[in-house]
Length: 299
Ligand SMILES: [Zn+2]
Image (cartoon, rainbow, N blue to C red; front, side):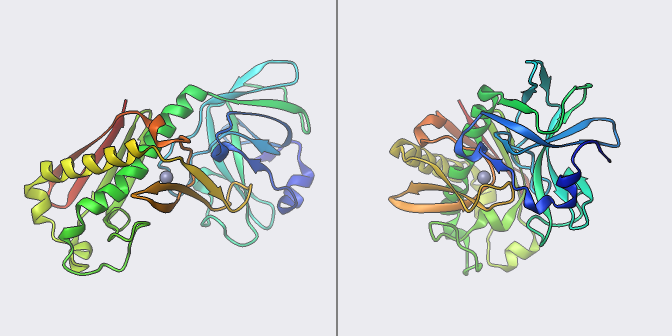
């Protein structure tokens, strides 16, 4: 990594706390550049004081990075080839995406949105640039992400009768949290969220009976879809509650399900009303008795 033009930034990164606005639904900001770094691969990593770009999380990359570009002061557009987490260590070292060696919110570490540009770009420190997110793509990703936040609690509700005892973890509605206890990976693409669950020994030990699910998959699929449709048709609003403006600040998805206020920790982007999601359908598949794959699609 070569620090091109940002001495202050690296000597005291904690003094600079860039603001993110993606969780407020923003797709456009104008901001001066705070740092430009050339990566080992030769790309430029640009950090601004304010950004609407949602980066791919380096620990739980369920929602992909936004697409879009940065416009320089001359009006030239520079396409972003990636949008990533940047971590700066207490001694001023710079790490990108999965090379960040510590967990999020580690003491004295600072976290920023890194806008990656592949081509040569004539950008300079403190120059005002326009950051423009592809709003159509963001909206389709947000619809799929919001749909998955309905699928999770609907899945827990459908499977509530399959627990022989309390597993010690409840969701926002007070239902045993199969979703969080069994989730292995979650991948959001345009209009689709694919969640993969592992129903292994430890989940069975916690009291979960997989057999009724495995032999009546369609029945559970119908239950889940009925709940999702009911919640979506109630048309509650969605809000992101943020504990701060920084990238690493904790954020929560807040809405109303069955008349109850629910809050689910989430670093992604969402629609503002459940009715905006469109039609949702969750399709269940169990390739074997230990694996459950749910594809939640919207249209
Ligand atoms: Zn989420």
